[in-house]
Each structure stands twice: as structure tokens, then as C-alpha cells.
Length: 193
Image (cartoon, rainbow, N blue to C red; front, side, top):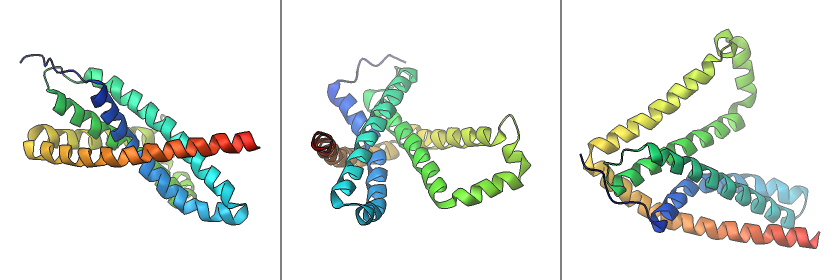
């Protein structure tokens, strides 16, 4: 096998950042819409806008951290793969990691009290050296491995993944615009205060 001479250019790295930003921003916007009503009722609409601005700002930072982690993982991908396949693999890893982070938050939102009771009633989950964490790590590893194997084995899946990623990067650009608006709101609120 030959080493691929195709390297990521700035546009490819930016596209990868947009892919990393998409699931986190989608989740944040859903959570802001979920919470903005009670914030506006408790305080003012301006505070609700500030709440949304801060949420988007922190999501932008999360997206940058996820992008940095995924970019570092890119060094582990074989150089024999072409650029498109490497991009697809890194994108799938980003989506799986973001999906697990979102799922963890959703579980905490919905089942917080029940989880504490479950951990107290099942000694296996609260035993040391943390078998629940090992179980979680195994689930994450499996959820990364299965989509990657599907991607590597089927060109049809690769084509489908590329088509989806193209559409999502366009939507992520809109989310970055919302980030800029959120940062402007934060700056304006802090100058005004």
C-alpha cells in the first residue's frame, strides 16, 4: 500500500470543525428553546437572550475542544487511506463522541433521581474499581467500531456519509452565525452592565 499524498488543506480542517460543531450546537439550541421560556418568565427577555448567548458561546468552546481532540486522533489514522476516507472516519468519530455526550446529558436530565437509586440498589455499579465506567467505555468503543467498520466495508455507506456531511456543514455555518450573534449579545450585555 502506498502512502496517500493527499493532505488536509484549510478548507478540509474547517469542514471537520463544522462537522464537530453540528451535533453540539443542535443539542444546545434544543436545550435553549427548552429553558428560555422559564428564564424569560423569571427575569426578562433580555436575560433569556443572554442565557442563549452564553450557551452558544460555551458550545463554541466545546466544539473547538472536540475538534482539537478529533484532529489529534487524525494522527492515528493510517496514511494509506485517501483524504475523503480519513475525513469520513474523523467525522464519524466526532459524531459518536458528541452523541455520547448528548446522551449522557439527556440521561441526567430525565433520570437523575432514578439513577442515584439504581446505583445505590445495585452494588456492582458502585463497586470499585468502577465497573460501570468500564462498561461505559466498552459501549463507547463498540459504538465507534461498528460505524467505522460499516464505513470501511461499503462504498455505498461512504457515499451516503459524504452526502450527509455536505448538508450538515452548510447548516453548521448557520450555527456559527448564531455563535457570532451570541458573542455580540454577551459583549453588549457586559458593556451595558
